[in-house]
Image (cartoon, rainbow, N blue to C red; front, side):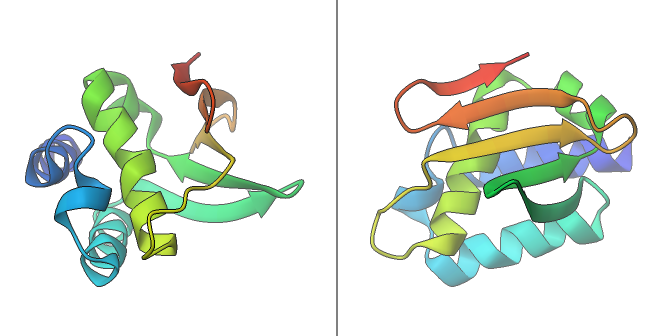
Length: 112
């Protein structure tokens, strides 16, 4: 329950698609670290040259779509301070490592 509350708080803090617009790069980095400390995000790593977020599957499943999109926006904000974005990000389960969602620059977020 604590993880879910924190995830919702994180989503509301940035608002819908607001991470890159409303926060600095340092603030976005801090939000990602808070999500890792709370056990929502387990890892952010490269898998076959694709940035991959390992996330708590139960928390991710319970989030509204806008909050899921906000995770990607926050990652892009933390990596780039000039508005650029990654070409692709994959979100996988912390337990089964199955793909939960995929974000691309052209299609946006597609939840599996």
